Length: 68
Image 1 (cartoon, one colour):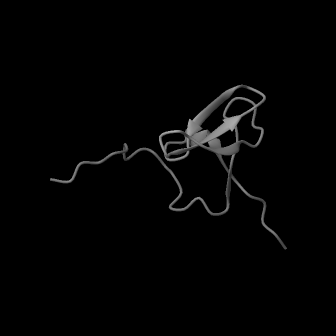
Image 2: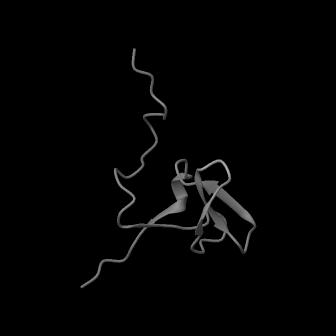
Image 3: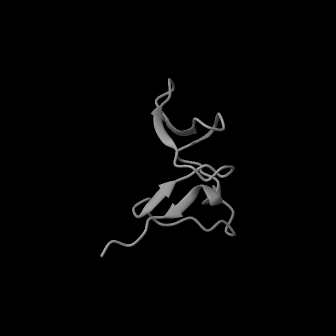
């Protein structure tokens, strides 16, 4: 039996390419950091908040502007 990890209502992009991680609270770009447990997380230095890279909130992904 296949168990779904996410709700079908969640609309995440198929790839992180073309998106930037921004803080859901202040909309500033977030920096990527390695965690002690081997995972990675994005951190907002202005707000002092973050989220794991594999489980971002929906409003933390913003499309990059198109080049050209």
